[in-house]
Length: 247
Ligand SMILES: Nc1ncnc2c1ncn2[C@@H]1O[C@H](COP(=O)(O)OP(=O)(O)OP(=O)(O)O)[C@@H](O)[C@H]1O
Image 1 (cartoon, rainbow, N blue to C red):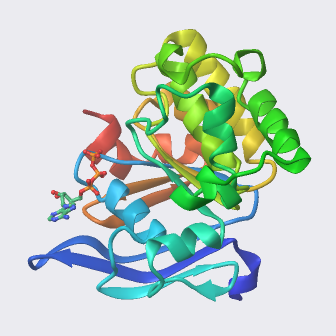
Image 2 (image 1 turned 180 degrees about the vertical axis):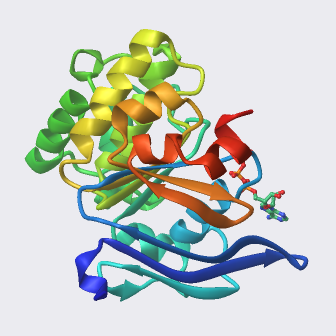
């Protein structure tokens, strides 16, 4: 298969920590505008895989191509510039700034400390803040101090901060952890909206949520891919039931 067919093209990827293979000769292909969910038991290597894609961890072996460009040796910041966004479990928003400011300073030109000090809020930035605020459902909270938002709203704000950079691949690690039922529903809708313009990879344990959002599911086990396909297919796969769903 030609690399051009996929947004993300991973082949023979491995990483070892003191001789232990956390990711073991893994192949993974993600389409443009695909929402892929990665599931699997604790320690399967899911977070490590996202760390390798965003450049937080360096691969021991293999290739990661994004839009046909080899990323494997690029540092984390260079991958961000190429359109890779990553959200971690704990939100890293500026609690004492308004929702508006949090989004504004996330606009690429305002990202460095110097850049944000001398940052001029142009029409372009204002327009982008408005679009993103609507996308994350916080358009009526722009003046609210971020620290006063609910847990779910803080998570959406952080997604919004990433969207300000218009990533072409967005990766989210357990985005609904700690959310209320209503917030989970809204997050599912949000993720379905944002994957229309980009690829999204989500790590998730909540199977009801996975069923709601996934285009395709990848099941990891011991650093490898155990199964892959539709939710229906992986849910009925005896290997998956044995190592993960049956527990
Ligand atoms: N920096 C590191 N140094 C040593 N071992 C590591 C490091 N990072 C991850 N590991 C190990 O690699 C394995 C995979 O961990 P990882 O966190 O990727 O699993 P996971 O599938 O995300 O699990 P969980 O669902 O619990 O988050 C684990 O055995 C972990 O202890």
